[in-house]
Every structure is written in structure tokens, then in C-alpha cells.
Amino acid sequence: MRYRIKKHPKQIDFITDSAGTHSYHVGEAPDFRTIRMCHENGISSEGITARQFSKEDFGKFDLLLGMDKKHVAFMKEAATPQDHPKIHLFMEYAGLGKLDVPDPYYGEMEDFLQVYEMVSKGTESILDMITREIQQTSAAEE
Image: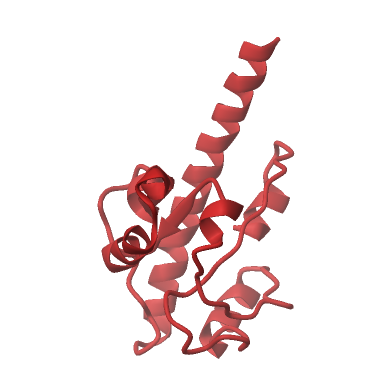
């Protein structure tokens, strides 16, 4: 997402982050296959380390996207009812269906490619949506 924001033709100024629902890999760099996939697509993974999702994220972010239905359920369970509208399934929010993005960790490189393609499509769709919303808000304020 960070890479796509930097490359987006419209200047978008917002904060993105990524977090796991569990602490298995906190502080670690991405899986070597993720690093390879990023490198092959011109995306830097430098400085990225895993962190665990926390309840404080509800106060930091306007939008929380789970990659699968279990992540969404996990976040909703941790959320107050007021925070539920911030939580969405990534692919569904992107307008690409109620699809889970599979975890490629126990798979092969092809699984990482599939996830990369899904996340790329979803990210582009979400960035376009956010850009339209910003433009509509700006136009309404003028």
C-alpha cells in the first residue's frame, strides 16, 4: 500500500500500517518470499517489521481492513460497537467480492504471487475510491 500511495498520480496524504492478529513474528522482517516478490515488482520492503494489532489501532486509524473473515471477526471482537464501522474485509471493501486473501506462508512461491496480485488489485481499487472521496469532499467544501 505504501508503495502504491507514493506512485499514485494524485498526492494522497494518509498513514498506512500493517499488523498481524497474533504475535508470532513481531519484530521480524517479512518472509523471504514476500521480500523476493516485492523486489521482483520494484517494491522496497526495507524497514518493514511485523507488529501485532492492538486496541489502540482503533484510535489511530479510520479504516481497518482484515485480509480474511477471521481477521475481521478478531478485530470486531476487540472493538467497541462504535468502532465496528471502521472494520472491513479487504477484498470486499475494494469492491472485488467477499474473498479472503489466503495466507501464503505454508505455500509455494506461486501462492505468494497469487496474494501479490490480489492485494495489488485491491489496493489500486481502494486508492481510487479514497481519491474520489477526497475529491468529492474538497469539491463540497468549496
